[in-house]
Image 1: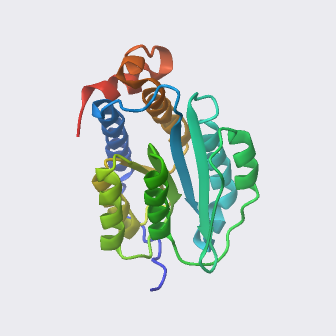
Image 2 (image 1 turned 90 degrees about the vertical axis):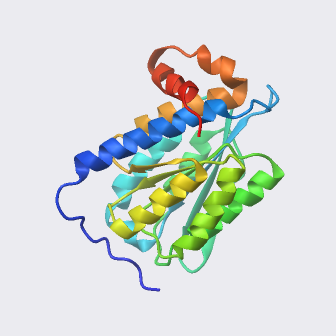
Length: 243
């Protein structure tokens, strides 16, 4: 299947898309509070951070790497959270790191990644998330990409399975391709996650969201109720809504 061109969206949907994205993330953050707190207090939360490193991202890769790095380092100061870095590129190449708490080491690995021509492999990312969860619960998946060249129904089926298991997917979308946007929004909906543009506000948005999720993962609902300061809004939203 040929790579989808990044067709510009007619008009100026920026304000609408931003409002929808922020609302979706707020809604997601709110959902986690309703999940039963069955995690042992000493067990760390887990985040799978996946990114598209195919050639279509090359024109903006330097800028994207900086922003992805900021997003990745946003997890560094969040206690009780382990991260696994996953990326795909080239001819069927998909690599993953071990689960670690040292975001700096994983950032160095991510910074060494370069783009290579190839098709998207989102299906393999979602299948990996399912396998990892079968071994030990993954609390969330973050995906950064610009297009989707795979069968949307298959991806949505996998997203639904992750949703049943309580593994939400946050999709940060670069470039605004409308075909990818439709697929990504449906993946987010079925998994109980959120869709957002990949822009200058993504790092701060992800940081607040992950802090609330990590606090919940480490200490449950009561820990969320004790959050104050910059993350209090995310924590409050987390406590207000259930899917």
